[in-house]
Amino acid sequence: MQVLSEAAKRGLVLGVLSNNKLLNADSASLSNAQQQSLVAKAAALGFSGEAGKVQTVLSDDLQQHIALVGLGDTQAEAAKISTTETEIVRTAVATGVRQLLQARKVDSVTIAPMPHAQAAAEGAQLALYKFDQFKSSKEGEDEAPASINVSWLDSTQKEWDAGQITANAQNFARDLMNTPANFMTPTLFAERVEREFQGLDSVHVRVHGPEWVKEQKMGGLLTVSQGSNEPLRFLEIEYRGSGADTPVDLGLVGKGVTFDTGGYSLKPGRYMDAMKGDMGGGAVVVAAMRALAQLRVPINIVAAVPLCENMINGKAVKVSDVYTSRAGITVEVMNTDAEGRLILADALHYVTDVHKPTALVDVATLTGAMVVALGEHYTGVFTPSPHLWQRIERAAHTADEPAWRMPLHDCWDAMLKSPVADLSNIGNRAEAGACTAAAFLRQFVHGKRTGKGILGDQNNDEESSPKWAHLDIAGPMEAASTSGYHTKGMSGRPTRLLIALAQDLAHKKLN
Image 1 (cartoon, helix red, strand yellow):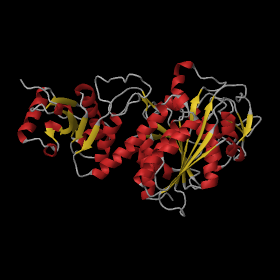
Image 2 (cartoon, one colour; image 1 turned 90 degrees about the vertical axis):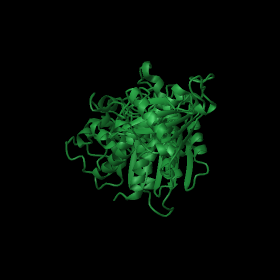
Image 3 (cartoon, helix red, strand yellow; image 1 turned 180 degrees about the vertical axis):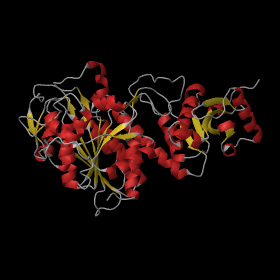
Image 4 (spheres, one colour; image 1 turned 45 degrees about the horizontal axis):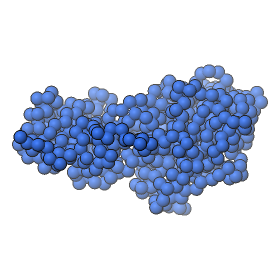
């Protein structure tokens, strides 16, 4: 009787087209006889290469476990299930890797050549992710090794390497978001980012403290942070990929609330554990910046992440308090749980005023209303610029991280009126919460608006500078379940969308 050798700890992911046609099996050193045997085994088990299906078999010589991953007729399948070929490949490879890890206990996986090497690398790397650093006994040790080597059998190494970088960036964002808040304070977040960027060319990281924030008159960040014993930080990252003397092409601003209780407008306890991830906007921004520097993308970008906690103590901001923002706009705080927009407003005004980027994008886990509207799969995008929206939509398609344009009309401005200040931080009616949040932020990029309440053309700021977009990621911040390359928990999305957007802007400037 044959027994499994140590070599059987090896795994192979092999693409299969419709009707069990093996894809590039020769590159995996499989003879014709071995290929025919695999096809016969697969057919006997009811596997036919349908997209989304995976069948794991043992090679005839008992030397390796093989995950046959269905790619279908990729173009036809992509049209049928409203996705892209890259997403089919990314999901198939991820599912194959998971099967080999969990069911077959392999300690190395080779990916046979298939279309879209970058997507294949992303699928493999994202599937490997787990967050267990605080477990004294690692969960699943009996099922999978602590580390695994993944390799690629093809000449398209550059694309594979790029996919490794983009996937590792998303995993970095996942780590930041999954880390408990007592291990990811504003100070610890900034220190981790400084370490991650060490040794990267054309990058400057600056970490500012409370005194600098006071000098900048960032009233929103000071107001939100005053309820916490943890000192605030303002993180600034500058990447000059196209030269020090050329303009800033893109500004990125990420919400960095490292834990959000809601303040005196206290959140319900049931879901408060997820609020360690309320700095998800900041996490994906710094993760994307790291990847862009590693990829040496020829673009100039400035990123800003205001970091603080939203807590309750004797000094915490109270409902009806009024503060003055960096823009000089006074704000009445009518809900202390609408704190993200307060710190974003100061950061947006700072980046606009100091760095003057051509395009400016903020990213935030901002409103529960967005979760209700779009669920966990789509990022909501608010922008008065159709040209910037076209670029974001294209990046979303490239990265397979869906985005949907939301309305941003003048009618929301009137809802932000306050009887005692220039603005209220929430709308005066219990409706359109995501839209009024975006309308609030808009005031700090393009100047205070008249608030006439006219339902007009939402593209009327197209000529304003910078071209601005707000990404509300409250839905996609967390994956509800594990499947494909998604792992239950904080998702690290939309890191790859931001990378794709910057790459697109590097290829063709936004005028």
